[in-house]
Image 1: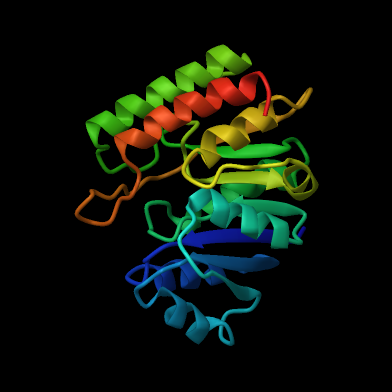
Image 2 (image 1 turned 90 degrees about the horizontal axis):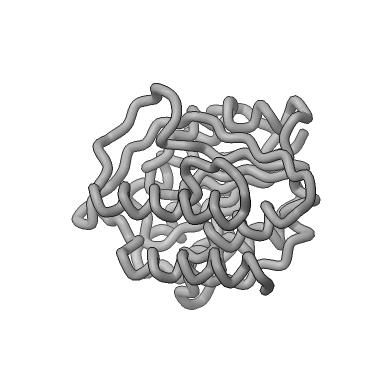
Length: 230
């Protein structure tokens, strides 16, 4: 099964080459779509320098910064894989976890697979407390609204059946993509969503972390909005 790996990137020149080389080492039948979201550092030149070296690598460039959700939507629209997954460009998530993330999809038992940082015994860098608390609250709200038991709704590692994700109309430009896609997936009848434990190497704001407390309020609004329409 061909896998499309979408790599949304905004000013990630320090880490993106390492991410792409680790993806290439997995030897998947993959297309790797880097969607640069208006970076002003050397992200684009770094990726262009690797296009002829890494099989399946393709760069798509937004002329201006639009947000992670917009970058992922661009990648989904351009994807051709039977499986579509998201890999952040900042090395908070280790590509070595991808084979086990994809296993339920390869095995035909899942339609959607989420990584989880809160179940299982994988290696974890200590979380920023308010991010941890916010993630737990948002996951609880998701479970109440959508009658599920997701432990890590905001996780960056999400993988989907390609036809399914391309059939869903997504509108969020920013980090509200995470609750929106979760809501719209869970609104599908009899969806088979699995979670797989992953490792996590979280960044601090000084190290380049971009999501803030304001995005938490946006996520709450998105979960409620998309539960009842949209």
